[in-house]
Length: 279
Ligand code: PAF
Image 1 (cartoon, rainbow, N blue to C red):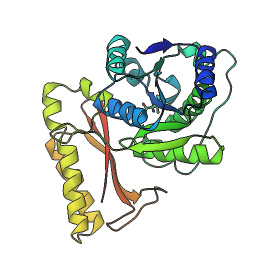
Image 2 (cartoon, rainbow, N blue to C red; image 1 turned 30 degrees about the horizontal axis):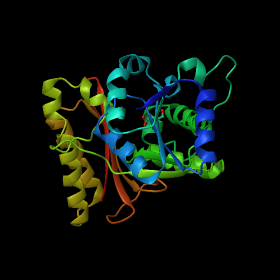
Image 3 (cartoon, helix red, strand yellow; image 1 turned 90 degrees about the vertical axis):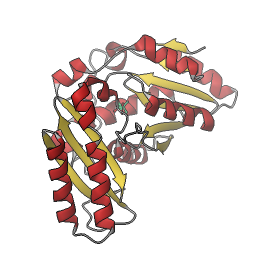
């Protein structure tokens, strides 16, 4: 049975009791609208911790676009049933006033690594993520935290954050879960029309083709230009970025092999899709 907790004080009591018995607590921070990607994180947490907390909070501070916040899918009843089936111990689902009470005045900002790509196209996004993740670590007191590699830049921002602020949590990145046709699972996928859903896998296909070309010795610029053209020809409206970068520092890089990572964000109708792969 998954217990639903909404207050930080009640959660703290529960976690303190677990810790007194020597248990290791794992947390999976989410914004709900759970899919198999999230559930794979919960399973990783289950395998690597004694107790598992999944948090659901649609964090207004990380949305630079109010329409996107309004349209973000929410279905706590369904989410809870999925977590129950997976044996999650606690669903922590605080309301906005619990996370940002009156007078809240702190912002956590991770310089450098937050700036390119998502940071450039979604100003303030990573300040919102870093602030809420810091709060969720404080509220859950977890020893391990599980994040999906689909949000690669976010994962690097969170790693930097816990190092810089000496937050005692092990950050564990888990592989992207994909649909059979290669589309990375995302809560936003439910907003795709049938026609858009049919186009969406072209993003991953174009990335794979670019990665193969770069590995085969093609100049990076030409391979990325071909991939952009293929994504647009498939029906995407815009490619916001398609960059080859160092997986850890996110500095631009020009050759294949570790630590090269190809990262993309593209608009399909009203829906913004992101993905990344190793090259
Ligand atoms: O990846 C997400 O769902 C969110 O950015 C997170 C980490 C839960 C913070 O709100």
